[in-house]
Length: 95
Image (cartoon, rainbow, N blue to C red; front, side, top):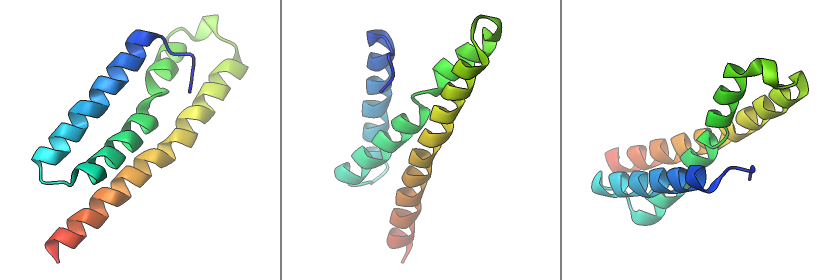
């Protein structure tokens, strides 16, 4: 986890909870919805920091930017996991 402040943590937690509720209202099982939401939030967590860092690129070193980019790319695999769960569930419901 990064050194995000508490308001960022609260925002991501709120996003996770809202996504869970959305997925449940869409007919997903709560456990699946929790997994999907967790993966989505994990995949997005570094993005605001990265965008801010690029917007302020003159105040950050190349090493800092590269390091944050690597975190974004590493966490992108979590989005793929969320996608795979959704596709698997959709296929199971269709068949």
